[in-house]
Length: 313
Ligand code: PHB
Image 1 (cartoon, rainbow, N blue to C red):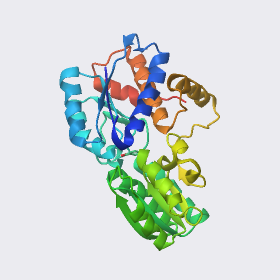
Image 2 (image 1 turned 180 degrees about the horizontal axis):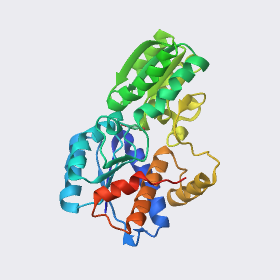
Image 3 (image 1 turned 45 degrees about the vertical axis):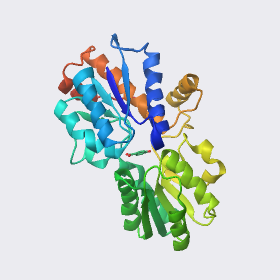
Image 4 (image 1 turned 135 degrees about the vertical axis):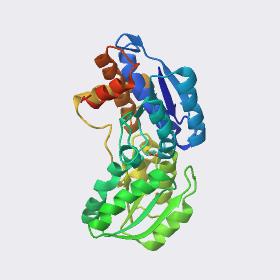
């Protein structure tokens, strides 16, 4: 039994759907079995709320008795469920939430990333942008942990490389109107704008960046969620020219990715995106872990040791 704790509503709804579909690609190919045991996905919508997620996690733990928890998407939700997961000694496969602390000061032997840390998504871009794009930057992000951590990692390497931050502002998660910060970015005339926005926030921000006439004057950069495969189509021309970093693109031409694309497309009628591949990796960990324990999920310390050694392409 896998307790799937993801957003299926609001700004990150599509992210939750993609992760779930990525898992379905793997479990479907395995006949919905792992090491001979039937795999059951119990899906709950976090609604992006730490309180809602905590309530649903409690249900997974006390009445469903799940063997794994998968999720969440939001760093704020991840921070809230960390202690209950650790205390319950249940394996959490973190299929998205980048909260840095989960693999630093709040790490747990029951928590694994099948995704990324917030720091990883943007630290590399800071020094590169200083060297190849320009020396002044305006930083923006969604106003919660992921925004601060992703923008902070970019800033750390951009400033260390000699760049200057000319302004920084944060906007409520789930905003549809970015006029106020776009006016500030325009007035500051930086060489580049760096942002963390994802899901429908990223669609609105990137489109309004172009509508405001900033595209072509100020280089649009960000963590790759800003123009990821799930939203590129809705952004259209507005996304062209953006410079971003990410751990996945659907155009990778290696055999495992080409196979994954084909299977994901057949299942969903859509090409995959970064969230889908995180779901795919998550499900592969489940299947491989059960293979190695002969289907035994009763001992989560054993599962934890096994998961630490799992490798695949
Ligand atoms: C996060 O809250 O950690 C988060 C959410 C959406 C993303 C990336 C990170 O695309």
